[in-house]
Image (tube, rainbow, N blue to C red):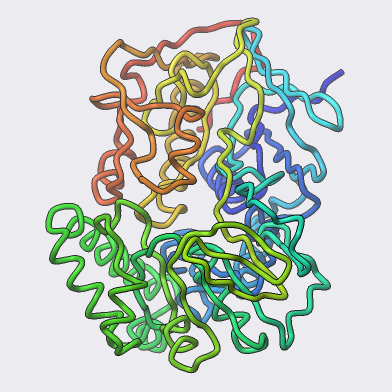
Length: 482
């Protein structure tokens, strides 16, 4: 017989471990398991191993609110984040609940429970919670570059970085200008002969200190939890404040970003050519440059930026449309990620296949018409964990309400109305996948706000009954917690 749980969580990354922690704290006694396709805890932070991999959100907001970040760095390296997640799972007694190497392939709802099919057998559950993020772990975005098979050097994608790749003294081209490229270029520049960041168009970048001076002072004078809470609040207010400024006063935001960059680069002409986009700030995510490391590499001459279009690969490197040839021994295709809704799991409800792209998001946590199912997705303009933790707490509240009233099934019931995209960025990796993701409506609870300050006040008090249909059907009942 299939093993049954009250709740199954898909994914043992930052979101999945956070969901398990909240479930244990707020609904003790609820049986659960975490199904993780990989062989280790960490999710994205276990997958990405390219040089310099780090967070692009500050760790005081990316970390869990219930577990203060004690590291020195504001933007932590990937291995530190991975260890932080592992430590959280170990300290919370979560690790024994994880089923590693268990990739979820499909989930079918039969009116009373989910039957979850994996590569290692079948499980059943009353409530299914997808915490697999939205990156496609199997493949990144790789354009079909003409002539790439002619290139005599090595072509790599950061998502699948070869462990034995030696770039010492090599000429390197990094294609792209997003968060990955901005990280890889300065990390390789100290060892490679030279690193060129080849971009089709510029990206807005903001240089932030490697350490938070206020956090360092508060940690010396206050308990860790209190200091973390204050720094967390400060960083939330700063990031949300700048986002609102960028959306309402884009020219002012552009001027500020330019001023910050000039403090590190001190070359207005270079800045105008390579770091001044045509779009407004926060039409796409800002790229963070910790300590101005990218600008420092450029000033030192170990890295440079070329803004141009690729014509084709040639044996010695890349030929541009203006006829120039950039010679390279290694080309890093930091051209973006592929997005995949709910981890690519095939959902079926009462025999009907669910196409996520035709559904509407309910409170940014559930899908209209899909019973006893939730998914976790973060903010586009702030740390992922901020929204993720609100989602975990909402799921726990919903489960408690169902148990208290003897309900076994909860289904959001969508009302017809205008729809718009779930993600509001113009970035290529987002636009390529919009039709595969749920949309959002024009009114609460069918909108997905990008405003943590509003959400943190309203989500914990949200009426779980609004636009929700509850029923009692034969199923393992979630025990009410007293």
